[in-house]
Image (cartoon, rainbow, N blue to C red):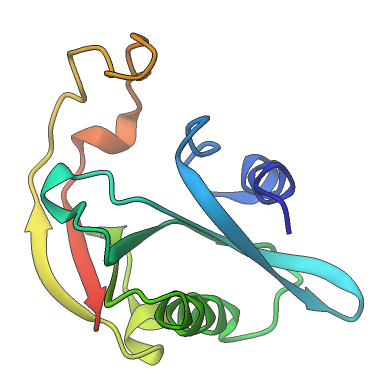
Length: 149
C-alpha cells in the first residue's frame, strides 16, 4: 500500500501518534479483514542516528482499528520483520510507551532492549529542509525500545 494510504489510516485511528513525517516512511503494509482495511504498519529509517547503519529499520507506526481481529498488531510486526529480512535487513526496532504492554511485540518475537528518557523534542532544524519538527506530547514520555534480529 502507499505511504499516503497508511498515513491516512494512522490519522484516523492511532491513539496518540500523528502521520509520519514527509520523508519518514519508506514502505507500508496493510492488513485486511473481511475485505476491509483494519490495520497498517509503516517502516522507515531509524529516527536515532546511532541506528542508521543501512541494515536497521524502524517500525514508525503500527495501527489497527476496532474491526481488527485479535493479534493483528503481532501479525503486522511479524510481517514487517519478514519483509525487512528479505530486503537484506538485519535488525528492526520500534518503541512503545511505558504504559503499553508490548504483548503484540512479544507475540511477534521482539524483546525490550532499552528505554528512552523523556525529552523536549528536537530544537534544531533538520538538515534536509530547515524545518523544525513540531513538538508532540509523546516526546515527554518514557518509552521502551524493542528489537528483533
